[in-house]
Image (cartoon, rainbow, N blue to C red; front, side):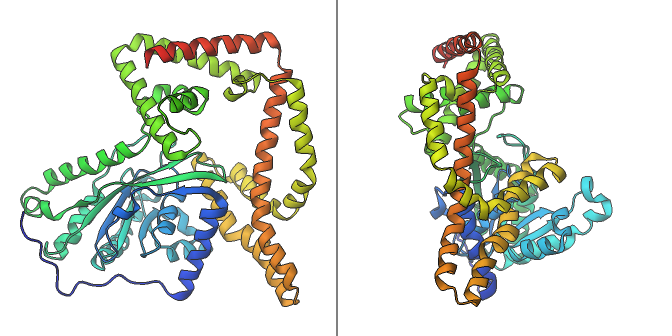
Length: 457
């Protein structure tokens, strides 16, 4: 391998100002401890050090939340990321996300041919960031997906990466860092998320070959990068049976399958590993015996349809559901009702505002999570969580300010949990009140389906 020669006067990464750093920490704290219940980052230590030009690429499944999670996680640097140009139309949001490192990207589909010409400024800023040894976050799929699968990759990220190396006379190392994101749920708050870091791909071994055959080299590197991302994420390629596969991995069968592998279905890294194995086995079974698996998916669809018609979830069929147990659960909820009333009295805008916006203005459901997060970070938490504290401090009500400062985030967490418990209680009531014949018919079909699946996979 040819010896690498570092550029003698490499530009240093640019740092944030004090105000921007504090604002970012505020957003990161709310994101990591209030909006999400838990965030995992396996392999984070493999990230190239700040000061090394790095193009970080990932699958894209949750709109603005995907890049923001990386920006908050990479606290040792000032990463840049591209976002759809329409997001920048709002003047307040424009200033905020630019401050977080966002750059607008224009596409003919949304912005017309004239709009695409504006990408020149964005590309120049990307090149400048890499010249400073900074990190640029890109999503090669070009748009977010609405399912857990990996779309085709554009190789624009490699043009940028090799272009940065070329600007340095191919004397400076440039890395491509594959990552993958995964969520326990895309749109709901108080869920878990995970960002997995792969092995960084150094481009210097390809420099000489790139000079002669750039297209072939980019194809080769793209296969390596995409292959890493595909292995890290849950990639359900069978989109024709996506709903059925999702039902199997989310429900009791998926929980049982995880435990059969010695994995904890309530621990997101274990659940991802289990789901990948389950999806892989279903894929292998479909390839080896497509007719049998088609019948399995038909039966799965029938069971799913039967449950939806009764308004029930799969977990309700796991254990005997009696009226007495339902009454005990209802009493427990009733006893906690005063606490919920006090909590929701101060935190209700956190839940109502994004609900109204999503239902009236947002058609793409994959944007709902981003609206939930953005409204909490920029509107409801500052107005309902911080402003009252400031008012109390101005009136010298120190204990009141401290109590409210602690109570407000706890009220969000408790209210979210209580509403989930209430939803489960409602499901429990539906199960107890549903016609026994229909319940037993769905149970029989479900048990037969799961038995056949155990034999196949």
